[in-house]
Image (cartoon, rainbow, N blue to C red; front, side, top):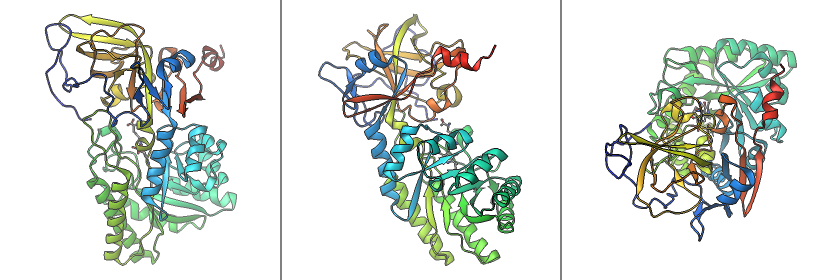
Length: 463
Ligand SMILES: Cc1ncc(COP(=O)(O)O)c(C=O)c1O
Ligand SMILES: N[C@@H](CCCC[NH3+])C(=O)O
C-alpha cells in the first residue's frame, strides 16, 4: 500500500525514527472529509460529533474501543452505487467487508443486493430478511452443506470456482429438483496494482478459472452440459483497494471477449456479467479514490463498445463493492492508555484495542490516519506510532502519525475508515473482547453488534 517518505516535522527525541510518513498536517485539529464519514464534525467545545452525537458521550455510554458507524453516510454511499449503475445493473454489497442484520436491512431498503461467501454470511443475510433471490454466493471452497443451504434458500446465483464444484453443485441441484443459476468466476490475467494478498485476477492464485489457460472455456462446457445448472454469466474480481480504473476496463473487455467466444462455440448469448468489487477508498489524505459514478460510466461504456464490436446484446452488469460502501462510514474510537517516549527513537501511544480489532496494518502494512477527538489542542504535532495492548510487537494500529504533543492518558483518539475488514476480521487474540458496532444517526446511537463479554468467551470453553 502506498507510502510517502517525507522526513520532516517536529517529534519527540532528537533522532528521527525510521519510517515513512507524511508531513505533519498544517492543522492537527482538522478532519479531512476524504477520510472521515460525512456527518463527522467538531462541536463548539472541540470534541468530535458524528450523527449529532458527541464521541465523549458515546465512550461514556458504550465504552471503548468501539466501531462507530455513521448510518446516514452508509445509506448515502449505498444509494450512490445503486443510482450510478441504474436500472440495467445490480449492485451486490460484499458482505465480507462488514455484515450485520441492521446493515442488511439498510441495503434492502436502499435497493441493493448482498454477496456472501460462507454459510455464516448467508445466515445473517437471510435472518435480516434479504430475499434469497437478491443474494449471491461466492467462495473457492464452498462446502457441500453451504451449497445445499444456498440452493435451498433460492439464492439468485452461485459463482462457481472449480470443476469439482460444478459437479457438486449440479448433483445438489438435481437432488433438490431445481435448476440453479450460476456464474463462472474467471481470472482475466490482470495484475491489479494493490497488495499481493488482495490481488485476485493474476494466474497464480486460488480463485477462479483461467481465461488464457482455457480452464474458463472448459468450465463453460461443463456447466452447459449439466441440466441442473443454468449458466447466467461470467464473473471477474480483480482485487481490492484499487484506484486505477484501467484494470477494471481490461477485465470488462476480456469478459465480453469470452461471451463472444461462448456465443461462437455454443450458440448462446449469456445475459449477465459481474465485474466484482475492489474500488479503493481514502485511508489517508494522500489517497484519491474514484467515485462510483465515474466507474459506472466507464464500465458501461466499455461493455457497450465491446459488445457492439462483437455483435452481442449488452448483458446485465453486476458489481460487488464492499469497502467503498462501508469503509469510510466508520471510525474506531479508542482511549489512550499509555504514552511512552523512547528518547531518540519513537513515541508509542497505546490504546485499549489493537490488532484484534484491526489486523489490516499488521497483515497488509495498511496505512491509517488518526486524530484526537475528545478535545482540540494547540500543542505541537508529535510523530507517534499508535499501538494496541496485545502481546505482539507487530500490534500496530497506525504506523506513523502526528498527534498533539500534550496527548495524555484518558484522551480519546479515533482511527477513520475502519468500516471494512476490521470488525469482520476481528479476533479474540489474548482473549480480547470484540468491540461493539454503534450506529449513529440524527442524534441517536444504538448498538447494532454488541460488545463481547467474558461470558461469551467462557460459553465456548466447555472445560
Ligand atoms: C468476489 C469478491 N467480490 C467483491 C469483493 C469486495 O471487494 P471490496 O471490498 O474491495 O470492494 C471481494 C473482496 O475482495 C471479492 O473477493
Ligand atoms: N480483507 C482485505 C480484502 C480482501 C477482500 C476479499 N477478497 C482487506 O482488508 O483489504
